[in-house]
Image (cartoon, rainbow, N blue to C red; front, top):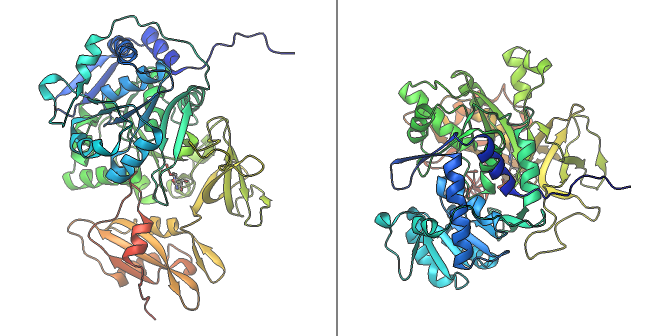
Length: 538
Ligand code: AMP
């Protein structure tokens, strides 16, 4: 017997309509690429989004067409999210940090017909133009007065919006239609295309708003530092509209000072970003002695959340919560919101739980599998390959059908992890980064997190280096905080009571700048190149 409910489709347009009906006066504020602050309401945004949707249809954007966009978090890209997806086309967010070669690759692979970009990226797009013949029209996301220099024909975003008619009649279609696509950051091999559906985005946005996840609500002011050019800014532009949170977009200013100004001026209560972003802001606060007067909570994901960050922000009254996920998972898999019994623990006890990656969102099924393929119990002790499945998790990469899942239908995350009886996930490492020493596995993440507790350490990356007896031993690579001094011996001594002996790094090397990937993670591949022939001390 089938249920007798309407089969209305889960489309992102419904989120826009919902927000406009219920939260029309809530603001959306942007530090624009051109400089000034732009401010309007959800009601006004909807009007412009409908005009943009109409104009896109008139420009010839067809259902299923890929529309590329290379831009910062701004109200214009926010408008693109709803207008492009709403007409049944696919917004392909391109990460400018992929570099010209990979950016060109993904635009061609996705076959983008239209390419929208912020002025910052005009030189990049001009250089790409001869190499992306699939693109028929280029659009600068600005006004006529700020039009950038560009070779050949260029459309101007604000003029396109103006050409559109109001009260656009949104089409209805199957919720499994693609809404957006995003390529993995390609640190190992070519970037791979992940295609989100309206259904997966809507389900994930609902789950992300739960109190056991981001817990957003009306009255919250959300500033997503995570970029709209990668995994839909962890769905912030959708989640905020579900609950009526005010949105603040930082544009191109993601440095400590730039973020701090927006946090204070707009009374931001919640923010989301990778550890590097949170570290930069913390250093800024420590350097200037400034306080955060409004920020209450933040979500940190993309790499392991170091204990030093949890402690650092606690001093400013901010609770950092860890999230774990992947581009392939829409992206959030788990969030660490402590239940009341753990929340009441003394701080030193509590932090042992806070450094875990957290519990799964609804509809995220996780299992741990041994290297021999045996499914392991969730006992908090045995770690193995982490595999996932659910309606917001990839089934196939774009144009690589049939090669993505295990034979029994799970997605292997490439992470090594354990899960305890209460459902808490703890990532040991990427399977490629785990250090195999004398038959045991050492977590590079544990060493990095311990090193970041040292007062002179700004950034840390650990790689395994070949060892004649132990197969591999850890090398810790450090960037010092500005003006701070320390030595290899002192850092190694500092780690001795924080790590098991097997994890003590055999050597510590200092570098000026940490190689970071397109999503702000330490690039272990680059560290391995830099220290390829490294000789560990006897
Ligand atoms: P991406 O698809 O670029 O977001 O990368 C996903 C990968 O980032 C995961 O498979 C993990 O290896 C890593 N990652 C994301 N969040 C965390 C976290 N909280 N702790 C440890 N690793 C993480």
